[in-house]
Image (cartoon, rainbow, N blue to C red; front, side, top):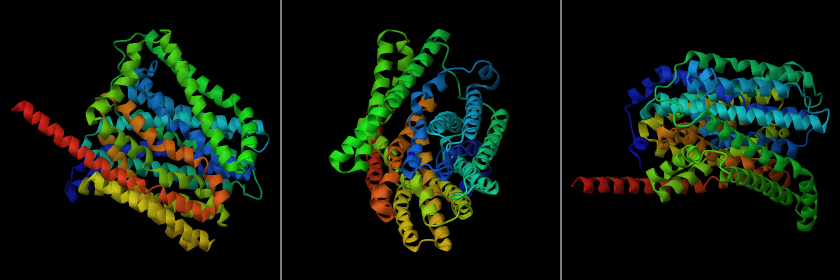
Length: 530
């Protein structure tokens, strides 16, 4: 295992890292990163539910955040391309941060301007706004992750991660509990829907992004951050951007124009299989794979025609991937990628449907806001800082394994709440355990991902890791509403606990393989010296 994963520090040194200036900066940037998430997920789901949108359609909206899972596609553009005027003034990282944050504000305002209850067309525009918000927010995440890794040494990454998570959770409190309190204050309820209440709420959420913009303007550019533009002309970069845009357009067009045919196929296949939910899942997966393949075909065709500089493509996409496999070896690299892709599957799949579950248990919007969005996120902040301290003191791998075990166990606690119904004290207990463990495991996991990155390809490699981290869980999460409708909440919670168990084997296998690789590299270097 790379040495940095097992680095241990004294308790005093671990605790003193909390006061580092860079750690405090990550708290503010984390707030900016966490704010948009619930405006796509839970807060939006409650808005749509009050507007009369079906439960299955509400959970499908979680796919609007798939931009987080495909952000590695445009991460090289952020690593390479300067922002006109801004890069020269602010530096590469700060310039892209400012652009992304302005995009987030614009997307939130777009969503606030549309009432989803008026028509199906309005619902589609809300979806477009959610997709744009996911894209802008994912772009901001790319830059913040690169900034975090480049701004501090490896030994400080666990605490930087904990501070980032704390800020992220505070942002989620603003967009979760804050949004629910504000919407309730303006008078919207499940029985008495008010579009104006949700409109005002989302406009207020947009204004909170000024925290991120102010931080971006005040911080310094990391010394190791640089834009790799010297070897290529402006035309080369513009053609790379055009290739990316055409690829995205092909993906969107395939998904959009297949909607009519997919509805017919779902109905026919559902009758044939006597299982409509499975038919819906199968057809949607086919649509997604088809759209991805069409995008790849367009990109390959453009490159084959010589439209884009092939060396630029190689340095932007192939070199970061090749560096990762060369550094860790093929077997270790694939184990690492499998671990990254599955580590958070248990909590993300459950999280998509959690707000609907609380509502179905009879909890009011105010109770959900207080217990889940406020108290729960505070517990996750506490768990994040404790996880960061323990990771620095005991090692990242130990905390990774502990976090995976506890994540599966806490999912089973939701069964108690399902049986008890509207029990406020039990709600607080379950929420406290679930969020504390999520913070604990999250801090260790982000530190683990940061340790894997080659600083020559910071944005691209970390974007791949963080995209893979959420891709499979979010795809499955889109069907969580259908799973609940067919199997019930108790069985759903058992399923989410069981799908987290293979992660334990992956952690053990990855740890052993990387230890072996480290020993082999050490022996090879020693034999060369002799």
